[in-house]
Image (cartoon, rainbow, N blue to C red; front, top):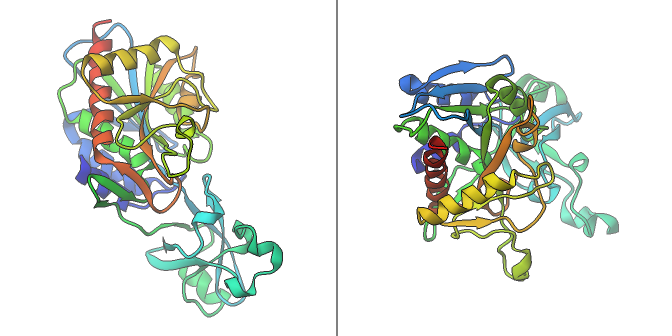
Length: 337
């Protein structure tokens, strides 16, 4: 699963441009499940399990990552861009990106040329440019057509004692978990959705949930950890190395209380490391899924990460295994309900 994660993260697939990841997932799913792709680009897969549970179950992960969309050119050949997803301008200055198979770097005004206002705040996206080494607008446009996308150029690497660092762990981690489960014998019939455009408004999940029409859905995601020096213990939200994260609320969803408690009890019963997210923050595809159709009982099981939506997201491999084990154990529990 770790090698799968690294491979998926190496592919470039920001919101609306998920083709590379979709093709790889369809290839790897192969004959393990029945697969279809909807008009928006979501993958829907159905896997027969040992039993058909009383409730229809959907597991969801999104394929897209944050990135950049090329919107214009300067006369001297630099690329203007807009973010795809929520990216803090403070994390992009000086970062290497890939655009149309080429290397670029995000830059802006040199520090010694900043005015007094610019010195006390990060440069805005409008003040940043992508430098691809072009000499004029015509050359830049020939090499990078308008509407092309750019992604951070940072592969996932292992470091320290089980840590992982790189781009797109949000949410290729969820994709790797779902793919691992599809390739196993499952305790019950299960639907899977690998969705598009989560980072720009959850539109893929809205369509996939409408099509699948589940009774219960589990969003398999990543979530922000604030376990950094100087952060008060009651504000760390969640921590790396402490296991999977169960959510009871975020900015988009108040999660089904009974299902949330089931997640915690299943983790305890199976000795799987789990923690609760201790803040009302963020959001994920559950925000669209739980209101689909007549309504869906929804839970979220997430991988804790530092520095989300940057080119150097950090996670821990043991937490990834805990997420996988917890989702599988939850399927076993739901299979007999």
